[in-house]
Length: 124
Length: 242
Image (cartoon, rainbow over all chains, first blue to last red; front, side, top):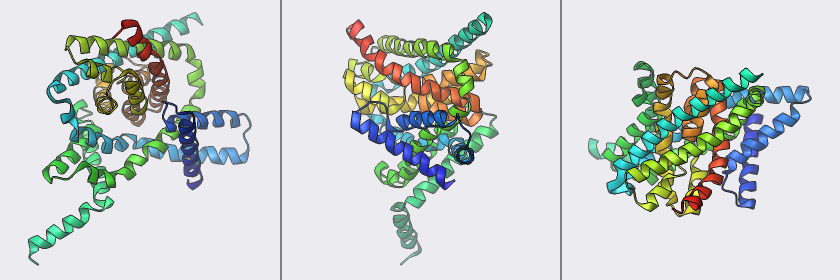
């Protein structure tokens, strides 16, 4: 467990460093994600005992962290509520734009994805 | 010291300690989660939304500054980074499924991101919002750090974009599943992908806590749409001369 926490932190650290060094708009943790995924895919070719142990540890740790992922958004969400006066008179219209826009985007995206998946599987 | 003064001094002590705010945050989330399960997954009782409402109500009632609360809650907030990195592991485990869906993933990311930008633009025009607010709204469906970067680049207000992004996430997490049920979308891959694309990390968190395949596709959609949106939005503004 401790080993896998170390690796996760390490990859985030490298991600943050890459982001700062190249002044990218992509956040450090996302770069860390890509780097960790690439590393796992490269290592994945040969299954050594060390690698299997590491993979097992990482799976346990990530499953635990990710099962409570929504909780991690509470602190920043409270900040939104406390600072919402920022929008003043336009709050209601902005909320409507967000609500309608998000629901339509979810619907459209799922519809397109299913249609393309069906097209691809039919042509196989 | 009277009883009241003693209680007050305990409150003063607790306020300055992270322990109190951490306990409150986790407790509020658990209450939200409990209500969500008890009401049979009713979308308005989303654990994140309820958790936020409960904590905010406590802060407003006792007149606590957000900065003071965040001093404690930042330990939970910190875990967002490692949690994002650890998304690599389920993606790695489902890698075969992702490569098998490469064509639909790449084309849907383009169409979906474009749709999110255009629909936001049209709705903002319809409600006659100020230009600055419109620009702050355009990148709203991607993860906050990327959205803020885009907003700054195109002349929006980055802190306003951050707020809008979080609200988008909560709405996607709360009403996404409901919308997909209404449209009878069955495939977990398409369901997760749509929620991740439209509502980034908060939507992905929701998808991940329900189904691993949906969560993995949400995470992939979130990452790819972040990159695609960062490229499309400036181009969109240039072409429309907003």
